[in-house]
Length: 182
Figure: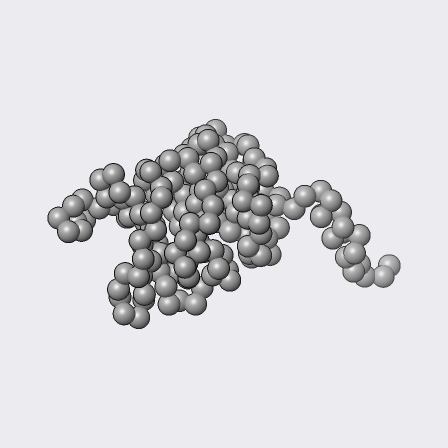
């Protein structure tokens, strides 16, 4: 499509949890942006700039306090959708195709061109784990509603389901589980 006579590519959109704001990716020639739109008035309220290459995905936290963007520039950026400020640039060393926040907003999964899923600690603003198993790019990531599983879709034509709990957390949950009496 065209914007002001220039070629534009949009690859993703995401609603803010309150439904009043929409984020969309836009890549103009040498001008990749995330645009925020007021849904009721259908007007643009902000352009979020900083990525240096195509932006593939955007995602909000469930509380709407953060917005993540995934880019071909091998970074994930975290934004404040209220102030429109860039809060963090997280370099991942691979093109980032997909992002998804865990339901509690503490982790961000990033699907990468090198076949990995990178897990980011949102509070620390850094990568804390790398999941390997796909033999081609990871284009899609999604969390289960309870945050215990992560699903990834890849160019290797597989979908993988990952256990998203650390062994320590899983053991603690098992030890406190209510089991029926014998």
